[in-house]
Structure formats: structure tokens, C-alpha cells
Image 1 (cartoon, helix red, strand yellow):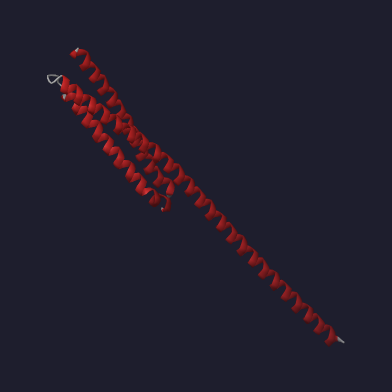
Image 2 (cartoon, rainbow, N blue to C red):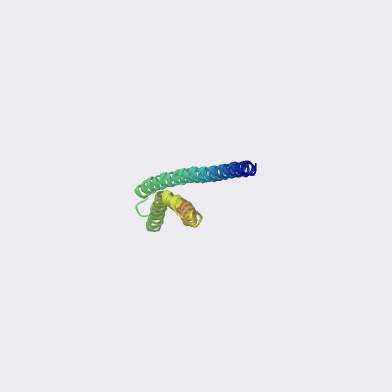
Length: 171
């Protein structure tokens, strides 16, 4: 009788241990699935964040390129008007206006180069270990391009005023 009860106790203990091991395996499996789920979700959020940055940057680049195109067209129109004015008034002194136009062209070319450099480095920034700091560099470059475009516009406004001043003096 005592052998039977000892054996049944031993069997019960073994069943209990087997259940506990099974529960522990299930818990571990659940922990792994939760961990994988978190990592997947984190990766998805990171990729969505990168895509938003790419879209925003593409929009910004498109706007900057449109501004550059407008300024280039304005420079061309100013040059043709200046050439026409010089043809009509060969004695007029337009060297300062030509210097200002050259300055505006150089500044515009520099702005284009900076914008292209920022565009080329975007993917490197997004894949870097610390994208926030790296994106600060791109933000500074974009801000610099914006300021250069403003400066080109200011120069062109002054040039147009100078040309008008020449016309008034010529009449």
C-alpha cells in the first residue's frame, strides 16, 4: 500500500513537473512572439518615419528647384532687356549691373550645388546611426539654400531698379 501511494505521488510529482515545464516553454514562446512583434512594429514605425522625411524633403526640393528655375528665367529676361537697352544706348555705363548679374548667377549656381549635395546625402542621413544629428546638417544646408535664393532675388530687384534708373536718365 505504501509502495502504491509513493508511486502515485511520484507520478503526480512527475506530471506536475511536466506541466510546469510545458507552461514555462509556453511562457518563453509567448515572450519571444511579443518581442518579435515589438521589433517588427518598431521597424515599421521607423520605416514610416523615414518615408515621411523622404516625402517632405522631396516636396521641399521641388519647391526650391521651382524657385531656382524662376530666378534663372528672370535673369535671362533681365539680360535680354539689358542687351536691348545697351544696343539702343551704347554710351550707357552698365558694368555695375553686369557685375550684379554675375554675382546673382554665381550665387544661384552655388545654391543649386548645395541643394544637389543635400539631396544626394539624404539616404546616408536616413541610414545613419543618429539620423537626428545628421538631418540637422541637411536642415542647415536647406536653410543656406533658402537664404541664397533670397539674396539672389534681392540682387535682381536692385538690378531691375538700376535698369529703370538708366532708362530714366537716357530719356
